[in-house]
Image 1 (cartoon, rainbow, N blue to C red):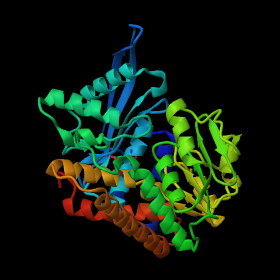
Image 2 (spheres, protein in one colour):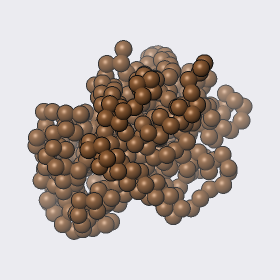
Image 3 (cartoon, rainbow, N blue to C red):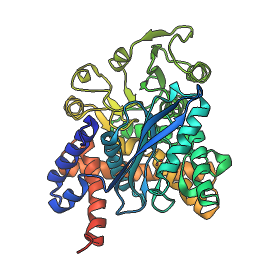
Length: 419
Ligand code: GLU
């Protein structure tokens, strides 16, 4: 049942990390599969009057430390097994960065680019209705992920609130500011990636400045703010890509122009910018660069293409962009890999801030948010380095070990019900 490559990878990472750290097999046994999983039909009327049914999922992996937390993905590859893998990664991500939250994930198997705005609204509202009794502001709190955004969260919030008869602001995070969102949430994942790149650069003695080349695979919600942040520190963003292709300029791209182009015309393909060259995504991954940020989707750097990767720092902005074979090869080759559950945790950290602010109806300023985000990521980065040195493992396993230590403590204290 759980046969997606991402699930197998996460499962193997979990087993290997458990073995290295000597985790009690009875604790491991309880973390192997999701606590609960729900599959729903999401029928909607399309603009042409016909009805089409999509498959939707919500998976709660572990809720020992707190309510489930994790995004909702709209993508053609979504299925139960991939959603379960992503929910498991959320458990470890929240535990690693010390949030009082468990791991969950949801999604619909759909290509959102093929639906109109009205169809997307119907899809979101029907999905929210189908899963409404499974979630709650103290149970499981969704957020955006690939293919969803603030507007999706606003429709979701409205539907859930209509069903309850009053506004339940804590039901989702990643909301637009005007309906209870937090400052800094939209850029938080990319900002967190940029912070982690800085910690990694410091660790290996790389100075981020005008000679630092950065390549970004996936110029979207994570890639764009990461690019902007690193560019503001003087780095050269030499290539960026989306599903349609990649654009390259060895002297550095005009990131604002690229981002404007994508907003207006959706895809990077055919971009007209002086001095730039169109290349393929494979060529982009093989570019000579200091930093590579795969920020799109899982399974991008694999056993087949990892030998071409030349970057010194690889920052996993996406969830699972490097397969375990690629991690092993690139670590042996000397690359510094910032693991996904650390590198892209900025999103869920500021989601947590949004949830807390909403519960208190008291909102913080951007400096407070970014300051706390920085400090949490720095502490977590240092913890992963400590585990990496103590157990002499790659950074991915080290991050799993750090997360497992927190989970292990909490699971032991709470015990197994019934005892
Ligand atoms: N979808 C994001 C992730 O994979 C954010 C989840 C959240 O904010 O709950 O971490």
